[in-house]
Structure formats: structure tokens, C-alpha cells
Length: 624
Image 1 (cartoon, rainbow, N blue to C red):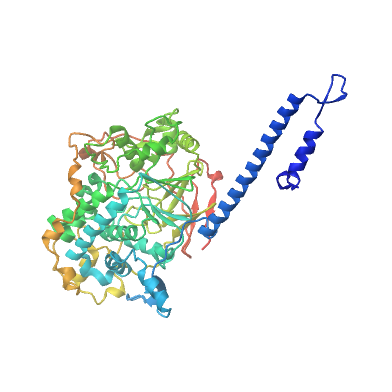
Image 2: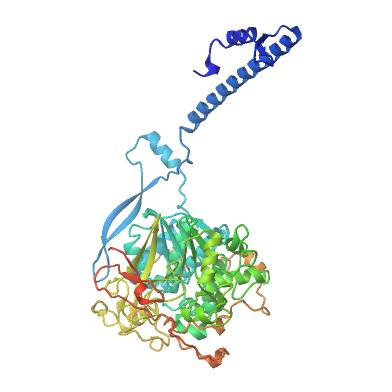
């Protein structure tokens, strides 16, 4: 029995005082007779009894407070869940294209139609966070689901207006995010998309076929949304709309093509450059405004993400340390210290040189090849010059090991390099390279687009098989195009909705102006957008950021190749004389040319780990 609950506590203390005794040097019990000593003992015992009562009182108060707290919170430890007045109704729809494919659609429907008056009143009083932006997002989603049905919209001033609105809204969301975001699994990680609407549709149809909002997990995109492909504006519009609708679920990291020096390089990428597509679609003035406003949004994108405090996600690779890498925070702290608004290529006047280097390393660096590991990579730091040139760096085994140990991470997931397998593994199965477009990179007809699902303690690779048939992008000799005129076909070619008969470049065929097709009907109020409204749609605060024309970036895109030579990434000829890069004879015997296992059935495939010896290769298989 607890001594504090003993009802005879007082009498026991009195008995204890009455029988107080002591022992002499021989151990014999001697009664205490001295009155003063007895008085001191009684005083001490009374203090002990008072303290015991105080402890009992405090225990009772704690117990009562705990009960009251439990009653107030209802026994819940987590925060209160938000409720929306809308639910989602799932239905089966048939596509409007010639394939007539069945697809699932989730539509918002108001709840409580048959509920009591009081319940309806409560539901009606609930705030609807999506109401103000629902029209804009729905219009972009409708375009994404069936781009062939929205050709007129894709060329219209309304589309330009929607892009300007999206950028203005998403820009404020990105400004509130740190330069390195932290999130939990499950999470899907996607690599380069490069204006490839077809492969983005594959992921939409098979991963979030009910929509991202109704799909468990987060979505992490590693950058390079524009250039190379013919549907850059559509890809950007869709991803920004998803970010606006689900800011805590969709994360858009920055790649090297989300810089002005790269996506404005019209001389290099021609009709496949982002700036060309903006100006060709909307005219020089409005097109330039869309391009610049979108780049202003790119300036605010985070550079990295960490999943489950274990997996580091970035577009290019790990940055060189600015401060002591062993100090608290390490390289992640360096990334967090990068300016909230960073031009990178070119930099703004306010950007610090050291952190401009950190940002450049995040979006430009590559894993070192085996040849570089043994020749040019610094053995102490693990870094060396990238084969891209232009000041870009590469990171080897030593740099990977140091970074993972210092930060307490297990893996690095990055993009930036094309792989026909969709996902490649290197550096002792610690570095994953994810590439989510199968076109425009000279990977052949059997190239795949991949992503990775991080599901708590498991990582699974999902690839698009070359045998997978889509319903959005058609070949020029497709029967479904028989009823279209030559002008309509040429128009869809420019929008990336029709491919050539082979994989060759089609810029020559797309030269020249074409007669503008009559636009589809839109709401008159939506279409009557004044030029003043468009001119005033950008944020005035951007005017305070000024580019430093005299200052060089850590990486000069004009002096780089599109990808390290030998990686089969570059689909453009690199003019050495025009670039000023000194030609060097490099031995690529140590660079893996890409061993690929082909499978003609199923949506998923097998990837092979890149390693030094063939006999050490391990297969990672994903069941379809």
C-alpha cells in the first residue's frame, strides 16, 4: 500500500517519535531522554509530515488537470482535421480520340444534399479553399486531359492570361518554402520531363488516374520541365496548376533548364527552346512576358528535398561545402542559406558568390564516370571537373560517402542525365538517376520514362515500357489523322501532338507561318482580356531584383555541352569553335554505354545497376 494513502499516517508518526532510540558505541539501545533533542526530532518529523501532505495535494492537482485536459481535447493528440463541403464522385469516361479508351474521372460534388437543415447549414458555412482558383485549375486540367480538343485554347490569349495568373499565385507559395523542403513518404519522385506531354500523361494515367488529390503520397519533380520537347507551355501550366491546388503535396524543384541562360538559348535549341515556344505561340511582346514571368517563378523554386530524413533529392547533385561540412546542418544548411530569389544563370546583384556556387552545383553537377574517378577527381574531396565543361563539376565515390555520412542520409536521387532504362543506379547503389521522358534525347525507340516510389522502407521503380500505347500524341501516318487538313496537322505538330514518321528532327518541316485556325468558343468575358490587364499581371516587387551583367555565373551554359560527352544525352551538335571550349581527346572506355534489358509486355520493366564489373550487377525488378 502506498504510504501516502495510509490512513494511520499521523498515529504512526507519533508512535515512531515515542519509540525514538539510539545506540551507544557498543551497539546497545539507549533511550533518548534529553528534552532539547526530543524537541528537535519532533520538529523535524512535523516538517516531514507537512511535506508528505503537500506531495499528496500536488498529485491530486496533476490528476485533476490531466482529466480536464483529456475532456477538452476529446482524447485526441493530433490536430483537428479540416472538412470541405465537397466530395468526389468517380465515373468512367470514354476518351474522345479514335482509340476510345475508358478512363476514370473524379468530379467534385457537394455533400449533404439529403442531410438535415442543420447539417446543411454547417456544411454551407465551411470555407471552400479551391473556389477562387477552381475555374483556372479546371481549365488547365481539361486541356491536359484532352489537348487535341483544346488546340484553339493553347494558341489563345486566354492561355497566356492563365499562365500569368498561375505564375502570380504559385510564386507566393514558393516564396514561403525553404530552399530545401522536408517531407514524408510515401512519395513519387520524377526526373526530367522536358516538355514531353506524352510521358507525363503516362504517369497521370497510371499513377494518379483519379487525380493527385485522391492519390496517397507526395509528388516530387526534380526539375527540367522545359526545352527539347514541343509541349513546354502545357507541361509548365499543368505542374503549376497542381502546385496551386496541392501546395503541401506537390513539390517542384529547380533544374538547370529553369534558368534564363538555358531556356532562353534559342540559337541552340531552336523551335524546341522555351522562349521560342512562348513567342511563337503568343507573339513577341506577350510571349516574352510569359517567358519572363515564368522564369521569375523558377527563381523561387527550391533546390532540394529530403524525404524521411534519409533520401536527398536534387536535380544535379551534391554541392561543394561552403562552411564546415561537419558542423551542424552541413550541406543542407548551405542550401537553406541560398537566397530566396536566385537567378543563378545569370545571377542577380544581391546573390552571394559562395551560395551562388551552391545553387549551381545543385542544378549542374553529375556523378563522376569511372574514368574520372581514376584520373581527374580529387582524392581528398571527391570532386572534379565535369565533362560538360563550362565550370560544372562532378562528384565521385568519396564525395558521396562524405555527404551521406555527414548528413545521416542513405541515398541520393537526382535527374539531369538521360538513361534509356528510365532509372539508373550508380556509386555503390547509393545514387539513383531518374529520367521521366523517353523522347528528344537520342535514346532510341526503346527508351523508357521512369519514376521511383518511396514507400516508407521500400523503393520501387516504375517505368513506361516502349510497348505502351498512348492516346494523346499520334504519328504522322496514323489513321486517326486522316480527316485532318494539312494546316491542322501542321498546327498539331507545332504543339507536339503529332510526331514525324521517324525520330529525326522536324524543325525544317515546321518553318514558316500557317493560317490560324478558328478558335473554339470560350466565354466572352474570359476572352475579352485587355492588354492593360495582361501588362499589370506581373508582380511589381520583381523590379527590385537586378541582374549583374558584368558578373559571371559559377557555370556558363554557353560553354557546356547539353550533357557529358558519351552519355548519349545530347540531341544537338555541339559547336566547339563557337563555344570557345578547347577540344580535348578523352578516353570514354570507362563510361558505361548503357546495357538495357528489353521487355515488350507490361507497363513496368527491369533496370540494371551501373557498376564497375559485370558480374557484380544486381537487378531491381518491379512487378506490374
